[in-house]
Amino acid sequence: MREKLLVFALLSAFMLSIVLPLAADGEDAIDENDFYVSISDSDGHHVKKTIGNGQTETWNIYVVNVSDKYLEISYKTTTDNKDITIEGKPGPMMLGPQGGDIDSSTTGQFSLKVDPYAKDKAEFVSTMTVKVANVADNTDFQEVTLVFDITVNSQYQTSGMYNKFMGFFENDLPEPFNTPIFTMLVSIILWIVIFTFLMRLIIPILATILDKTTPDIDDKEQFERALFHLSIPLIIIMSINQGLMIVGASNEIIASVSALSNVLYIIIGALFIWRLYAFIVASLLKKFEEVDENNTVIDSSLLPLFKMIGKIILSIASISLILGSFGVDLQGILISAGVVSLGITLGAQNVLSQFFSGLVILITRPFKAGDFLKINDKVYVVKKVKVMFTEFTSWENDSKITMPNNVVTASTVHNMTENGLPVKQYVYFTVAYGTDLDKARDIMIETCKKNPLVVEDEKHEGPGFRCTNMLDSGIELRLSYYAKTFDDTSSSAGQIRQAVYKAFCENGIEIPYNRLQIDILSDVSGEKRPDDIVAD
Image (cartoon, rainbow, N blue to C red):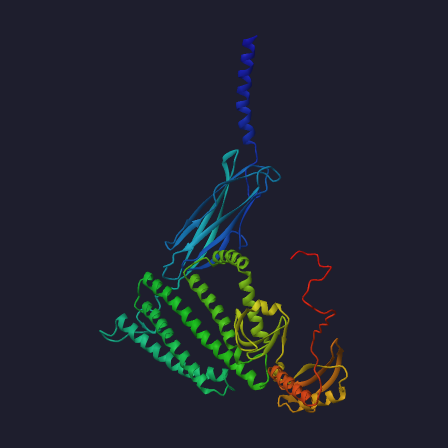
């Protein structure tokens, strides 16, 4: 029995070894309908791209399995230019059938980088071969070739400028004047002369266009001188860069000088824009003042604020451009700066609140230096408004107060100055019961009218009288009048009180005051009372 089972097992194994290869050979082979390959930013398998010095270009390679087979994907790349390097390519990947547990699609990245010192403009081809193989049979595969036509756009291309005056005109002079060094020196001198002449023409025209109505000619002349002085180093730097190409300097030298030149371009450009910005802002503020002399919203006192904002914006922009010219990832810096800024914001909310409150005060101009403000029922005199705080003095000018701007803006501020207009003031008096009130009224009004700080005209009524209250010891009377300014209210009130008191005394009008009356109900003999039983 055991021998029969052994023979049956051997026959079964032999039959399976014959049937399985036949079954595999009968499986459908992979064809172009079982998958598809595509490149991002292209219509098919062909890409054309121009890449500059030191730049990297990346494409996404998509492969999708649309069959019921398990496919293995691999990649092979080639390039035919020494100035190009392959920075990255996709790795091998297995794709499952659609609807299965294994992904049926994959996305890989292919990157090409141009050498930073690639000298001349060139065209080349890089290829990627995508091999798609059947996992069940490695001999069953298809290949798709992706073509990348690349043009190198080199900024160091010198073949058309070598030994040419100003990069355009051939040097056909006899020796020793036909050398590239001589050509470079002459070109630099010519460019400086030409650009200097042009700047002498253009800058005055620009200044005139920007300042047609500004009466202060000294500002315009200073502006012209500043722009001209900034243009000279700009012209020299540009000439030297071209001169290096005329002599055919190495790419490394040209690149180093170009990197330094970019920094100087940014700095000079920022200074140029700053001069232009400051001149335009100053001119506009002057024009606003000329149009409306009573304008209290926009005037030349806002010039420091606009200058500060301009400096901040230009500084940030210049630093960003300089870092970017050296290939620094600004996005990462901005993200880090955002996180740091968030922490600073949370930790310095009060400081930021002071800063923005100062900007609001400087822009809206609710008060100015010299104004009398009532804040929390206390009067202050404005001395100077700054970005972070405002300086005050007390009304008596005996102390200096520095108040954060966020405290000022959060308070209810009553501007008592009102642009120097007269201010109404009230002075109270108390007379005894039985006083002739008509006589007291006449004395108070006539005395008030004699005061030089009191205003009475067609817009402001004269002194007024009113009986305001019946007190325990007398009758309260109120005198109202207009003082010339808020600053005169305290002085005039004191002078009027003194004059009215003197007039009341001369006319027999009594001003009551609190009195204490003591009545003795029994005689004091100095002897001990009979009912006093306390021991001595």
